[in-house]
Length: 241
Ligand code: GLP
Image: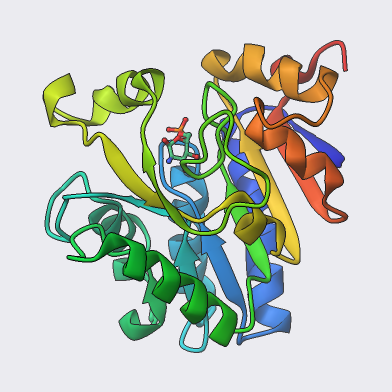
């Protein structure tokens, strides 16, 4: 795992956005793996700004998001589809038909998971995957204990994850209890991964990630087995490593 120290959130966003923009310029048909949450917002803002200013085109880019809540429609302000439309897609010339998220409203969720994997495969896999880090070490919504062999699946969210994401909802009751997430094996097939870590609340889990063995109780630890991972983290979080 290559480690890049960023001075602060802005520099972390800048470094990651630059990597994505360089990739799209050199390979316009790139497939991006995208994440939600607070961490990637600065990156998305920069991608939109760059596209406006410098004309970087996303017409041939495809995207696959890591996860989506079960039971929230695309119009629901807390759905990840809504987040992506608002924070990224609406600011780019991307073809909406090439943007993919699991459908959390699907009648047959198991079938939806199978189809999502098929779409990913058909697209030729992910070139660059952006990843945030959950406070309990989750990636996507793969909670501690998820088998490293997992593919896209339905998960019961940990109480701690629902608490952590409660800040985006009016009350804890409104935070869905289930989600669809790409599995750990699906994530590991990306050709390159950018793991982004920012904020004091991530200090403990980042220390654990850097110190501990590769174990299923710490999902992000699997990334140490991937040949092309760059961890971009704020410098204070990396002190002592
Ligand atoms: C959420 C998402 C993850 C995200 C993580 C960190 O629950 N499912 O994809 O990376 O938790 O979120 P944040 O960036 O807001 O800390």
